[in-house]
Image 1 (cartoon, rainbow, N blue to C red):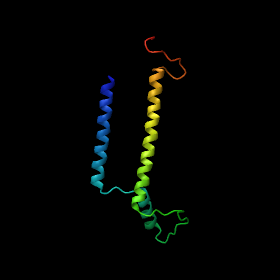
Image 2: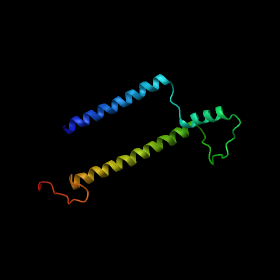
Image 3: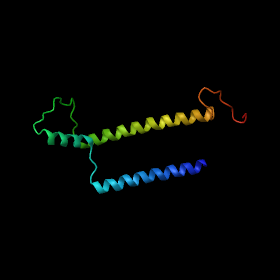
Length: 109
């Protein structure tokens, strides 16, 4: 199968995954975090529960939490992009040889 066709199919599959996720999310209502879901479950099973540990730092507001989450996502995306770039450049310079094989210079195959 040509590489362009594979790439096109992967892009279409990605778009389909996002559309399905959005449709499921719209049908079920708002998106919630696992922290709030866990808190609700704890309150439902043991209403008198007291946490045994207090956080060292309380966030001043929801905006800070969103900002930290966005920073975490940006750092993750940067690291992923860097790793993909390293792998791409490594393959570009070494050719398509398997690990441990001696790379073949372009035009000498």
